[in-house]
Image: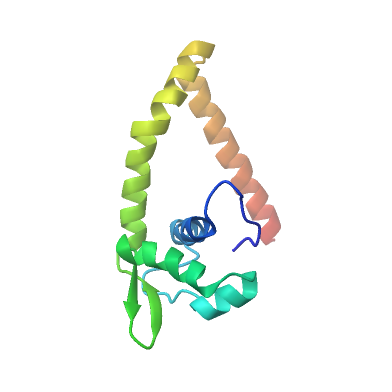
Length: 132
């Protein structure tokens, strides 16, 4: 997790968002344990209650489950649910803005798709070079 905090959002919310990002990116998988409240609080110099509040939001959203005496764990299907929710949010909130911008600028959707594919290919080639 990134130790830098944005002053525009409460830290507990940023902590929650970082755990969500870790789940979406596959850093945390179904059944994985979250770092303990004590460890996160000590590592990032936060009040343990702040960490607990961020974790509690994840529990309330059923993305994480508490196991008494053992800690908190990513629930089964958390990533799948997050992807579904994020895709829906993108289509409903962000896509209309992107679509309007494409139309306003007179961009060709086929050209945009080609650009996306080219970027993917270049990224794949760069990754392959790094792995050698």
